[in-house]
Image (cartoon, rainbow over all chains, first blue to last red; front, side):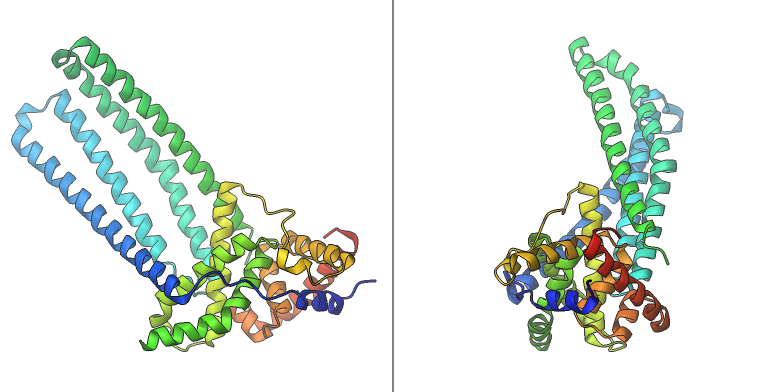
Length: 190
Length: 164
């Protein structure tokens, strides 16, 4: 017959843990990590600003009266990319706000809330963004057909829709992964 | 400079405890435990300035350790890595065959517990006080005492007959 004290003794007999790092290595890694986060944020702000400037500049240049399939298509594509980047940016900000020194229950609840928000993005925003982007691309096709050689047009057509199919698989995989994580977190009951 | 001295002190005092906790969390997988333990101390460095002495420093570190292991488990779950049949190599030299088998079973049984109970029993095995465990998990000490009795029973039975 087992008793818990036997298990405790067995546990205590384990040898110490091998230390395969030093504090200066860890500090270095932490500094690199913090720098990477800052660069990532600056990059996101930079991309957003450039896209917004291009978009605004383009529409000022084109003028409302010159709106056609090309400008609308391009506008939609750039617009949804901006929305997507903003959503990712908000996600990074939200995740960063979850401090690792809260209690396990509070932490897992906040992480679960974060993945619920991610799920909303995947279920509501991602399909809208994906369909709009595809529609935007389709609106560009007549203009490509007119201005490009047949070979080049075929290349744009195949590579364009090919990337969209690849993107759909990539998004589906990401949604599956995040759903698995959410299910795991839901098991940590209050 | 003062921060570095403090960090060194924390690393020397807690690395082994954190590593053992992570090792239990990952079914005895040394590599995953080392990765997670390193991540814990990277976070300790990053957040050390925000530590306000509202709890014991050990409680603060255990909270970071538990939450970091949870995040690693999340990544592992996403990668679908399996940690079954892993066992700390360092332990094998100190045990008889029978004890080694029992310790393997013990890791397996701990791994069968839900995340919260897993953390509780690992901290019990590491000799962390009830007050600290309650603070780390985020439940009252009374609720913890009720749970501990049941988890200890479940673990003992599981090691005996393999079922939880």
